[in-house]
Length: 491
Figure 1 (cartoon, one colour):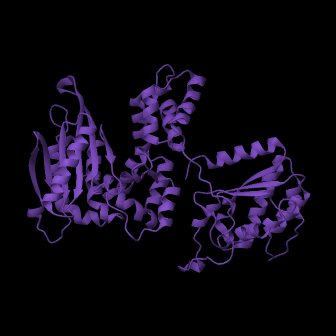
Figure 2 (cartoon, one colour):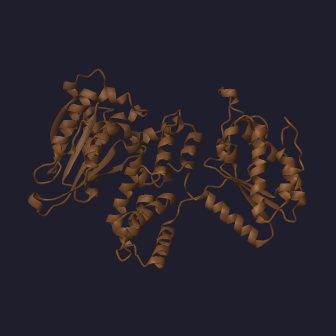
């Protein structure tokens, strides 16, 4: 997946192999040929120059000599396989080639690179690299190449049949996260509280960029965290998480871009709705989303990779809509005199908003099937952004979306306050109204039990039937189950 330390790993591997002295290892970045596309002559020429340039600082002059000895004339197509053969003949050690960002290549340049690598493998190691790593955000099987903009996929030949093994750089383990943070403690004396370590693991699930970004945000960007005598607490971890999401740090922004791809949408949208994957989803689509690091196979099936991504996905999909709401909705409208949020007033306001704007807003979403849930989350996010947060639970086959709104409040005239927790369960009316209601009530109460101290519970049921009048869809009533009350909202 992106931002997991692939390049760092390759450079460390290069240095390790060269230090051993048995092999000669060279790293090269293929982005130099990204713009050549179908101009494979120029693309291969740039790749050869990049490899030779990278070999020089490692004390090797034979790569440059092999490049210069080719004496290409105008219009001639450079042969990567000839270059590699001449170079390997001159080397005293078997060559290992690490080619990074291979997925940046498209069109004929990628095809020719693969075919030239394929053509020389039987000359290893005397006249061809002993081993080659092709590194990118996707497996080689997923490089879909199409001819001249048509939809015809190139599958002929053996260019793509060159993989000895496909490896995925994994996430950190819980112990590795703790070990990494302890390195900071050993160098600076600043400790991470045990609860903070546990929370960092829970939020990131070891995604390397997130693990490092959280700690950097706390220890170098936040004034409180820059005080090395101040321990890193769970509160600082949560504050750093919110800062990364709100700032839309580059890695999270790239994640947003991937979410808009159709093959990603086909997998993620059912997860947002809590339904099963459609039959149109191919195994390649599924593996692609997993390879990108957006989802993973957990103990309960396919799920978003970590809680931070779980929050980022709906927020990124509704970013523009959140900005549009800034001029329409003010959080101060819903803050009661005692400092708490008035969720009765808030959801009544949303009912009115959805009735007037729902159809128009649904057209703005790429994820139209999950539109109702996304619109409500957008509306809530606009309010919660000013001092609180929302925790989300959703996934395949859950038949609902669980939201936990957390709002720290202060009492009147600066008096003692507290933390308000409110459960909001979202469901789509798919079967009978009575069955949906009973399932929703049971799920809402179960989630309230797990949430730890939620003072209110709300169940929102969206009715997608376009033939029904709004007067039938819009309602509010209180249901009592064993002395526990749930406010049910029809929309």
